[in-house]
Length: 298
Image 1 (cartoon, helix red, strand yellow):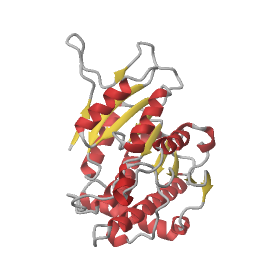
Image 2 (image 1 turned 135 degrees about the horizontal axis):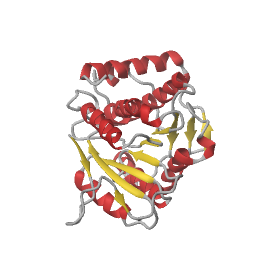
Image 3 (image 1 turned 180 degrees about the horizontal axis):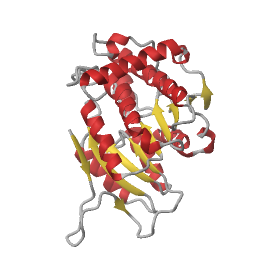
Image 4 (image 1 turned 180 degrees about the vertical axis):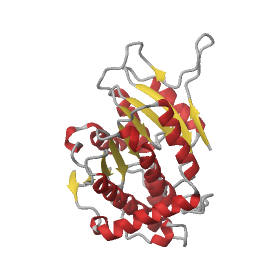
């Protein structure tokens, strides 16, 4: 299911696809930034910071009601930031494809894509595409969305992929939907697979595409996933949001394509060794692309 949401029009005005909070035209430095999974947790906090900075933020969520609430909250912030919203279920690759098409219909350019949406556990971990939901949402959906939006991002754009300190060797069969894994294993493998394709795609594009950066926002922040996995309240979400905003906008990340930023140490660092192995990374990218072809969106 895909549906674009808009602000509620007044009786005398036509429906607009974005919510403007100022009649002043946006400043030239205003960036258009798509943040997936931005109805709660780090995604919502990141969107809040970006809107407060005056950016044009494309919100994404799976739940229309939560997305509507996020639009209402962020639209009330002072300043010249702008908000748009899109509904899509990233566990379904057809929805991911539709999301990319909807964004492209409204925007000739996209400055930043923040692939933040993630899943740790679900009552039924198998999607309609017969994939493990962790691999579907955390790994394959952001790969497909990134590929579809490359023309909009161009050479000056950035892709920020939300990785994790939890990374473990990827089972290609599980990535392809064959075999089932415990929650913790599926999550850790999905995050390493994300980190692997981030570096692999960055190296293959070189200077002909956007900078692609994988970021561990900080371990044990107070997200829904941390509460599900560990039963802990976790740390301040603003820590994670701040580093995602830096990765999206700061000059220090402009030439960081293919790198991994570890916010536990506060610096660029080496990811899991498998992410530095070209052969293993090529295998993982090959599995993802095969899955997408089999689903019918490749």
